[in-house]
Length: 305
Length: 254
Image (cartoon, rainbow over all chains, first blue to last red; front, side, top):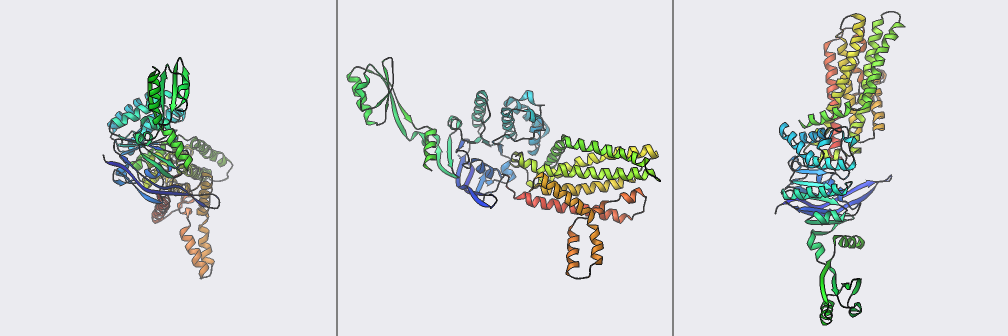
């Protein structure tokens, strides 16, 4: 796999207040995004997600550190030709109609007239806005702006797409459609950099994640590696055995129609429980290890700070 | 090509701005009003119509350049529309030049519209088309190009209200700075005189573009003056745009 985004030791501080004081936002961000993956960039509000993204896209300049896109400096036009970007809140030219809006961005990429019109029609259809092509953006709802924002991010058929909170402001169907589009992008061989503080979004679609808290990346890796390393407890569903038999071995979480749901934290207690069930002619219906979810990991890391 | 794309988008933005039509409406009223002022005048009435008409074009052109120009770049930063544009393959200077040319194009269209109203009014009076008036209008347009560059320069780092005030101050200084020439002549040689001379070199002299009196009163002018004024306008605009580009080049858009 080749690296499409390489961020090395990124630092950024902003000066704020009447008596100017430097506030460090990024404190040495280092990350790599490989070709063809969906990379989740996760962090609480104010952690520095959008600041990192702005540095990568050349909207702001880092104080220190290096950013390379496809092996090129991030501010080079050649690198920018291969990327797409959907900002956090859809900020667009509200006096333009949807089609004019996409045409404007297509022209910045120097697309030919024929390719441009074909692409615009295709994208309007993809994001479900073909009927709104002649409506000015000022009349768009938040969800519609998010959709047209995605369309502009894809106008150049980018190899790497940056999405900042792409599911914000969408209804459940819109969220599902957006997730499907993100997964389709991966199928087409594109790389997606997804910024979000909504764990569910990241967990459902991302291959690898980096967790940023207070301007530092605290954990980075494949989603399965990060969350499946820790087995928190086991859930065992048994029947035809009284709950009192498992005293001291596990906690009975529920009892329904002769079935017991046991929560067992110590692995060595599982054998003991199985013995008891077999001796009493009971049945084991399921044994499920409950691994740590991304949420658990996230909460753990944030609290640690 | 990219500059042109941004310019056309800016033009589209400006012509969909209601303030432009409001100013155009008042400009038309002012130009037409010169006809009534002429009725109150003793002597050559048509000169009043020409004088007031040209002054109206200049005044409303200035208001259009300042009021729209100061908001152009600031709005992009404030409304964060600039984020998606900067992320596209376009240099920052191309974006800024596009914005500038877009507004210059808008002003050109507005000047043409105001001039049409003005020339028709003159035609109704004299039954001739006075092409000479176009010289004065052309230099009003050159002055507006400088004002647009000033407005864009200020809007790179300041709010529209402050930028408007600064640009207005620039306009006033520009039209009064010629009096410094007289002052320099009267001051005794020394540090004071040198300082005044340096200041006079850098301060704008917008009176270079004022050919209203000469045109209205049919006064003869050597053609070198036109060339000098044109070059002065061109280089002053380029100087201001270069300053704006330097500021814009390393600006963080937060």
